Length: 251
Image (tube, rainbow, N blue to C red; front, side):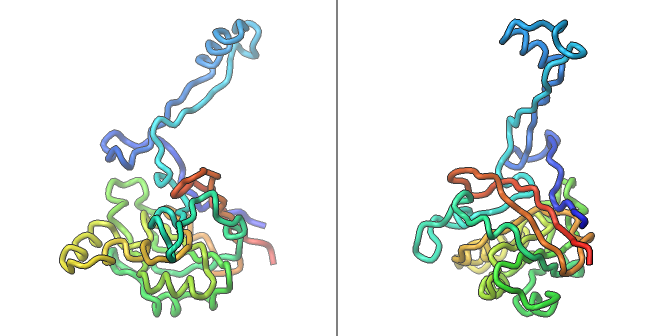
């Protein structure tokens, strides 16, 4: 059995990153830990192995969408299908461990979203209920670049409905977002003057989950593997970080 990590590393972002998108982490080393032990419990460094206490890290800024994460329906709209949308802690665990399928979209340019026909043509077999479908764009190569947010072909609302109609409840992509890049959507929405153009796949009124900011999809076969993508149990959350792992079993 081989395990393939599909999760991006979590680390502090450069100061030039927009504040909304930035991850900031405070690292406290073993010497600081020893000082904490002494101040809290009166135990001096001479009573600690190598004079060291605990090392700890504190997220001082870490949005639920700032790493490889799973979106809940609550992220898209307050209501889905006329009912209150589910938050991340309300989704069934069964959604997040299932067979995986890869759709190869590495030939698509930025802002060239996949239609239902594209998905049907490229998916290695017809999806079954609760399969997890991962769209491979290759944009994880730019995950550390400032313009990562502006890259990716995207997936249309029509294609999202096609997958949902075949029982897929979790869909993922190795780009910043499931829809085409935000600035491209914004321009189309302003030109059309109509609601439903901006964020169309997100807001297609379906109770499904997206995994965004995946990596290493190029290391997967197109089928014949499982995906584990359990999100943190954040009560009331629109999303939660997840350690997404593909499990490729020996024949």
